[in-house]
Length: 88
Image (tube, rainbow, N blue to C red; front, side, top):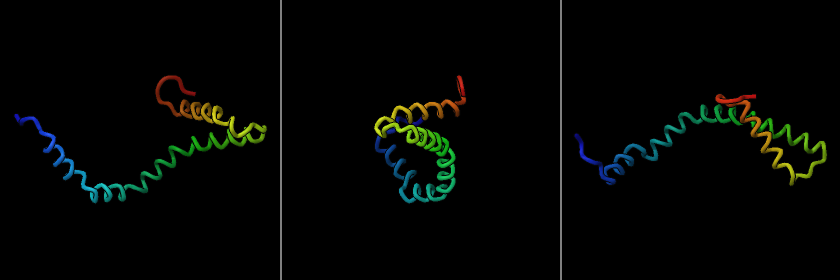
């Protein structure tokens, strides 16, 4: 049974495993996939906020009071995409 690893040993393994060039190469390879997933996940929330913004501006609500409306809209968007509990 191996002995307890010391901090120095764990750090050496970390330095070898997570070399900066290695991480950069891996992230560069999947950047297009990451961007597409981020865009598809965030666009519904952006659409909800933009819809609420247009409604508020049409009705003359001051910009300083938009925050609670955005928060409520984002909460509704979160519940629409929920996979547990009650969904809308």
